[in-house]
Length: 173
Image (cartoon, rainbow, N blue to C red; front, side):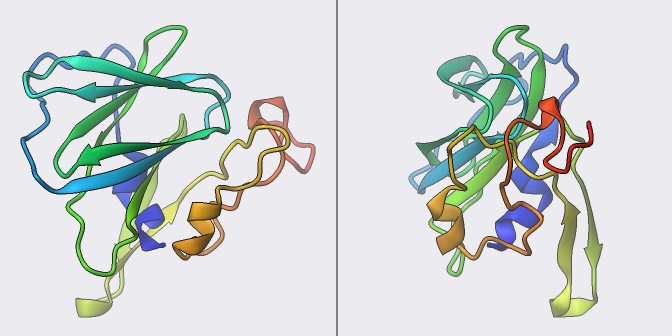
């Protein structure tokens, strides 16, 4: 639930020309973790695992509005790129699972710069985020797994079809 509303969910924005050149790499880990990527972009995204040498290894292409669940490990690094142009979008680091976390870590591929701020004090501090509604492929419902994990406050509720064709209220974005 709450993991959708942390900066981690949308990854770290990358410059479109960014190259992963070995300075960033996955770290060896025995902490298996499943990650679900949701492509909220209007175009297909390619997902790459960054190996232990810092090289990008292509795993899957994800059309707009679609999700994929991958087996990964804590402290492994993933990069999303535009499939057609190879422009870098975001980088993601798989979180270590702690009691109370959803068993699947939800990650969002988006062209919108993710904004979040820490609100509250002491133990009641939490991230409040602005996450754009996902693009959902025609006829595809919001992933059931997101319902079972609490789903957050509703800001990520999927509705309508590709945002690029105009918002669900008829306005263009």
